[in-house]
Length: 128
Image (cartoon, rainbow, N blue to C red; front, side):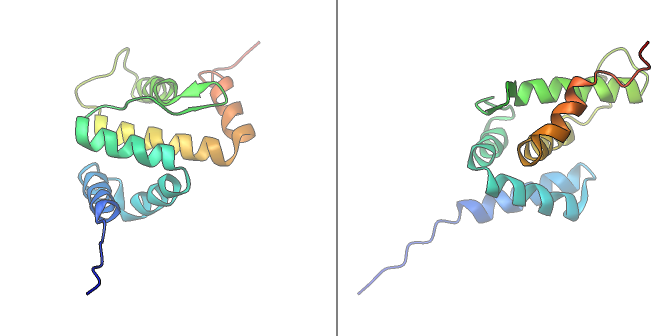
């Protein structure tokens, strides 16, 4: 008699991702695109699992000198500017920020030149 062993981990992670994305108002299209990215980059998949299990990132992924924490801080900075706040308020959805940060890393890994320019251009303020 042969036995089939089925590891349902990816199914559970995918379902969790869809649920968290929906709770954040990110929608199914965002979840699908992020899923494609984390499957393409296994280290990001591991980060996503770690986040779902622990509520924080382990920050083990580095790319072109940037970590997920670097991208998170960059995203928070952009959020604060867009919302004209001097600090990250309670109204900011931290789950959405983490998912967007992981998506940012996917985009960075897909196109380092384009995304790196966005990171290095600063706050987008006029320069003299």
